[in-house]
Length: 204
Image (tube, rainbow, N blue to C red; front, side, top):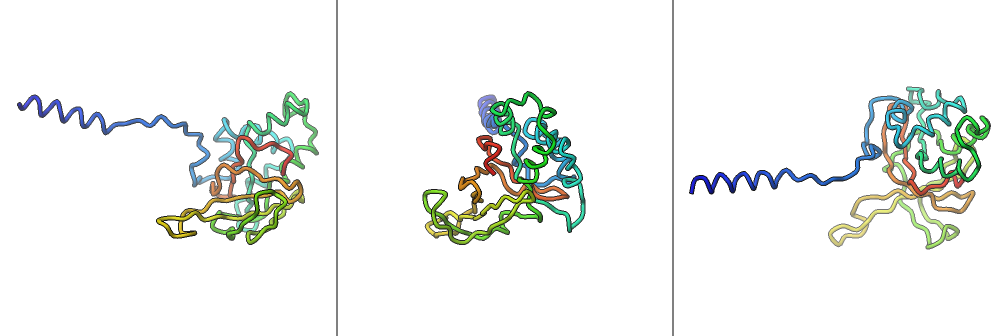
């Protein structure tokens, strides 16, 4: 009987050690005690192409200034997004992209200031990108692109707008929804909003 109890205990303890086998891309980790450029360099799977674009554009200092007045919010295109664009554009390496084009690409993804999801007002829009907008906030990138951000709160326990927020973005220049993957990635020099893998460079 005693042996049976021990065997049962081992089975229960073993069942508690379940592995869920998820893929940790590193994007969802929220707080990084480093500059934004150091954060991007630390995740080569997602960011090494945009790091090379930033360096080719001579804009590294924008991502490294550690003071309140120079904080930025960066809508980061991942390797997948940039490589699809490069393939369609006929570029085999970042060094083949003209420096002026690299600069334009980077600046169109940077907003001056530090914007967390909680800083964005709630809003709404119809079923198409050209529908009438309500709420939210318009922000202009350093490259001149105009973006409209808004948050939407889900319902919780039957109470409307009591659930967690989701962040949404619309390019007013292209009248396209900008697919976001993960907001609120915090670094010492600003906030990274990771764009979805399906985002296509040039639509911002």
